[in-house]
Image (cartoon, rainbow, N blue to C red; front, side):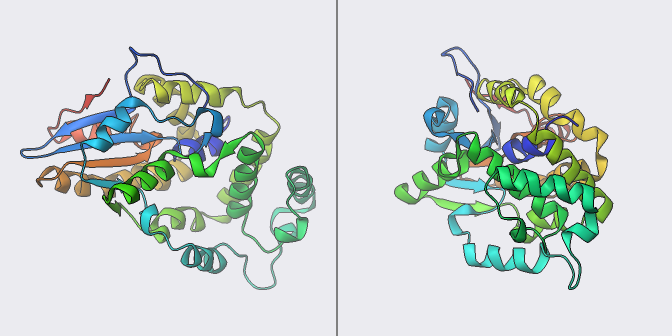
Length: 289
């Protein structure tokens, strides 16, 4: 699976340069009286390269509403923390060591120690939560700034400009697809995360280079291909959510207001991607320069 978990958090959803002639990771879809700009996102960016692509900024300027996977403009962090307490913990009496076995647990505690995370912080957490926490900390270690993510920057602009924000789904829907994974798949997810922590981050540069230049075929190759080997993860995290989002996007196309819809880049490309689904329904997405 390569760096599948890091790819998902980066794109499910950062070092390349955008030339003046490059395309952008934004597609315009025309309705009868409105335009929906559909943008692929990488959710984190390093501070020194946090400038958003020009095409994305133009799409934002031409839109009256910013729509994201979840509405970060109204996200209640206390509600999120309570959700994680309810859904991200192991059942009473269970321990991470007991669930994943002593050898794997040793690898987890070693990785956590390298990233500055106390062992006891993990002992009652489900394997999928541990996988995400380790990946998040790895990104921080590599210099990625959560405050410089694509959506975070756009939300800050929307608040300053008085633009409305909205979400395609709730926190429960977004994280619930992981929380409901069978335990064997959660452990497999954790195994892959541990493997990725030992690999060099060079492939992430390729992903973001393709993202910045709007290279959809390359994004599909880098992002979607290896998820096919893990359908238990790809189906609930990508294709099923795309099918739920599609009617909402088409409803926007039936309206009169331009909207910017920003989702993880993985949701746009490949079989079952939003661009393909929109084309099947008769729309003609046009990529912005």
